[in-house]
Length: 436
Image 1 (cartoon, one colour):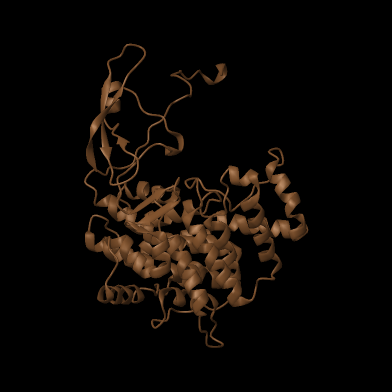
Image 2 (spheres, helix red, strand yellow):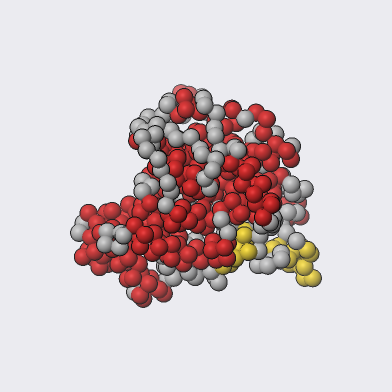
């Protein structure tokens, strides 16, 4: 960032002296007012619940323009990355700042592939969970447990440790997700297979059994790979901010990423695609496509308590660029599997059509978001709804680790310590027990 030509002047109506604050330019996007010395100069804090107007860091990884509906990783538009690159190329870009050439791509793929297995004792750790435990509960524990198995990559002040931890997390997360799934359905774990692609390998670990050979469908592999790319990073969202805040204390990368997994579990964040599919199931149970109109009326009624899940976005006030890409992928997958007449998918398309044409939703810019389409695609592939957020976590891991490493390398980073506006009791003294 560079110092802007102008400064911000903070004035007070009570006659206190004005305070001049530096203004900085980024390479793109809004300028920022530097308030780091505000408390020292005025004795006051700023108040910004949810940090909606606060830049907590400087970052060169991901840029979002919500008004224009733009998303870029390291300057590259998501539309180009999702159609011209695979997930591991995107990982290389997020981690190292540049897309790999042919040699670098081959080397990176080989390195990740060599780390996809997990310690055999992780199987015994997994058996401590109930079979019906939510996959995100299991995954939070498994990721945190990695720090107990890989002691040689837990020092975040060591660049080599950070490097190998990043590779291990990217490589092992799909293995852990597949293990959690296999455990829940009582099937044997499938070990990684080194001659398959990153996403093809994940699908094999998910759906293969020792009984027969399994060959991943390339259309479905590409669809899931695109889901991974679209979810790889999304700037300073709740889970990424959690990873940064957790990592600012100096904790190991596995613990920081486990914190991100736990945050992502929330229905307002990573759980949104699960909530969208559950909403479709509820409408289907009430009568399906014939009941869509009635459901839309309930959504418009503020007193009904009914919410339209999978539409609209906190940041995007235009069409989510990821949703457009997932919409295309959704049609490809349904066509490949012959599922256009599936009742739930017909319901989803009917809901989409109404939302895109109804003035109530159009005026509020409640467009279908990436969660709406990715949930449909994952269900078509055969992934159970309860596993959707775990898939999201596997994809977002590279973004989390890239953001964490960037923060550690920033000379201005400090342990996170938000302040507060205290509204509780003023000082008071304890009375003897008999007089309380």
